[in-house]
Amino acid sequence: MARAVALAVPDYWDDACRHLGKRDRVMRKLIPKFGEARLQSRGDAFTTLARSIVGQQISVKAAQSVWGKFVEAIGGPSTRVAPQAVLEVDNVALRGAGLSARKCEYLVDLAHHFEDGRVHVKQWQQMEDEVIIEELVAIRGIGRWTAEMFLMFSLNRPDVLPVDDLGIQKAIQRWYGFRRLPAATTMRKVGRPWHPYETIACWYLWRSLR
Image (cartoon, rainbow, N blue to C red; front, side, top):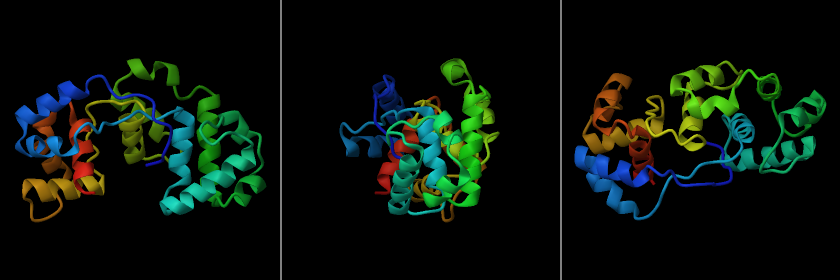
């Protein structure tokens, strides 16, 4: 997941913790271990998604280096880049930042979706999770997992369960006593008591692996 500026803690967090503690024995054990730690919202949508693309299939350290060169190439601040700035830079400059040809294509497509209004950023707060996911996965280089991470960490949607996430799979295997990594159907069954706060349960499962 790309790093960005933290903004605010979700106002539903304490209610979610109480709900999870009552409904799930594992959550009852995990939640007290992390004290006052909280999920925090990330910043600008375009910047967050661009960082996700830049960071695909490379280490965190390499992603930070490439991101810095990319920001320098388009002439913007590292905390907020603009779609128009990406579209105004030629492919040679983008490749010079250390981006693969495919990632350059992905970033340009992302910028076009934002500039052309094919993603309805201002309406996202009123839109259902799956509708937003449909908009995001229509962008080249963004799959369902990336879209779900965006819902969780940028829009702070409370009820997202990313069944393709290896960390969540490992944590469920560990804490719920499965011999193998659980299938998606099994994960959804485990997560039923978490509803409507699957995101918060996942956050604690991620924390439990550290």
